[in-house]
Length: 337
Image (cartoon, rainbow, N blue to C red; front, top):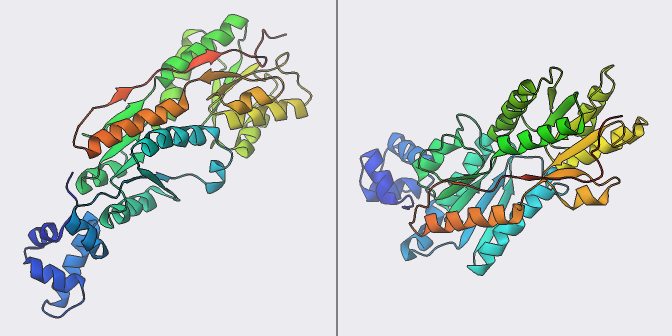
């Protein structure tokens, strides 16, 4: 993978490498209009003149980047990310690589971070999460020729490899299990609606509940936080025909839903069955322990790093479907009263 150079800027601007050097270093010798055009091209392709020494030496940064477009407070309570990062570190440390992490507030900010990291030679590649439909990050990563692996999908990512699991199969198993217990009013508290994996879960939930004749099945969107998961649970449980079972798109919202049910005087699992996605220590620490969709998140992260390090070394491994989450029944699910 080729990093941006002065020669790349010169070729795109139609000027000499000397003119590019003058423009980027604020020296006389080029017109102001040419200087502005050269600076704009440098920013566009992610070139940073302060990294010239490392560029000349050809040295790797021996670090990979991860940006998270989520509220920073989520990282302190979200076991999924912690499990994922532990998987990253298990592979990175074995190869003497580091992980560079930054939390951002938008996709546009995320793109600017990629440009800066790549231009400054701070990273050799990136792991990208939260794939979206028509994701604006994909063409930028391709333009920069920045080695990357995307966790999530499947989706349209060009030649950038993906790692994903069969979310549709997992949620189908969960719904069928609840129906086998005798539940006919099943609801779901979903994650961020714009994410491809959320959309896949929503579509699968709608398909399986329709096929099983659950005409009142509904998904309430949320944001993975306990606060919003709790509010969504209250909205569902104050209805006259409240659900007898709820599936949550993460463990944090499921624990919050359990607290709301208990606050409202409902028995779990007598009055309400709860299923969490993904499994974590949180699910076993509460009472009753939560039935969950389980997968090895740390291995998921380790697999993504192995794909990325191969890409950095010039080997394209292609996209991979990881193992599907499987249901782990515990005390939060039972036949409805």
